[in-house]
Image 1: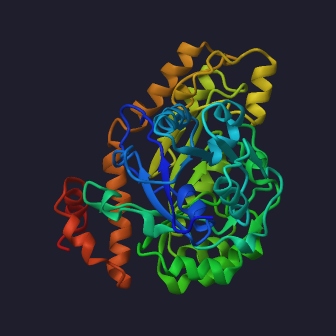
Image 2: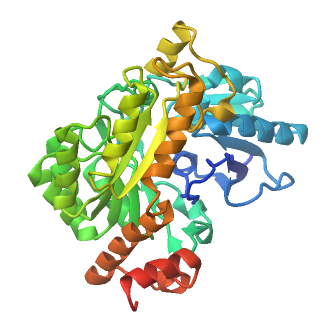
Length: 430
């Protein structure tokens, strides 16, 4: 087999929702996949959300990594362009797994499942011109110890800042999720067994990331208390500042999370109960910000329920809020339920962006649900824009960085751009 194989790895663009603050984070899936490749593969990476694809670039093999349903049609179009030029195209990633049957029609092979330990077979088949149409490893989980450091060297760092402020790097300390939530496909994709990576590998990779700001993209940190405690203790010396999905609602764990650099969390706000009110307050008591994630359109929500929920958010001191419309992604309980009942109205995957109604709601019309979604965004951000609220969160983290000596000179250079200037005004003379 030829040595020094040149692979073009592509992350397709998708259309951002109108009216929301737009920024691009360095994508995680492609660089985790790249870490699983044999060493002889020379990888060139393009994130189409921040740069254009050079379809004439010399390469032996093209891989397209798709995370979102709103990327799949663009991914298919990219594949067609490369295949016109005689290139073999392989699809992988979350949305390849969710839309596998359709995607098979657009590529030379699709890879389903986790990549670690499986790439030698695929590359070997390609080298012999014997690619299988499907490499299906769904449900056949590799040893978690095989997960290596993501290939962040493939990023063009300068492309991932928002108007002068360095964005977060994505990182995962575990895979799998023991929960099986109605709108979520994680249990299908990664199994219902919580699989933590070894602590030494987690800390070594974290320490090697040239960015003080991280997003721990684990499905939930609140899956094993002993693991959380140990993880946060190990993280404290790194002085990283990080975002995550929910943390265990336990004073000891919240205190350790704060010491370890918890910046803010994404926390589901699903009702107007005192439990939610106190949950948000406890995060704040430990200096941890909260971005509420609010799902609209569940069958148990009337119009009045949704309006009360939206109004409630203004009472509980959320730092940010992100509103989504229930979206029946394939291989979720929502999809199976709504499809069985004939309630899915739209199968255009470009519309599966969590901001458009693609099904028949139970208690309101599709038009009314769309109206309530728009009202939610405009109501919550009526006094302070989303960008201004983001400014306050970044101001907080930058103050902490200056206090503990992790402030980066490159941040100082970028502060002359617009968002950076606003953060600078909030902080003072930096």
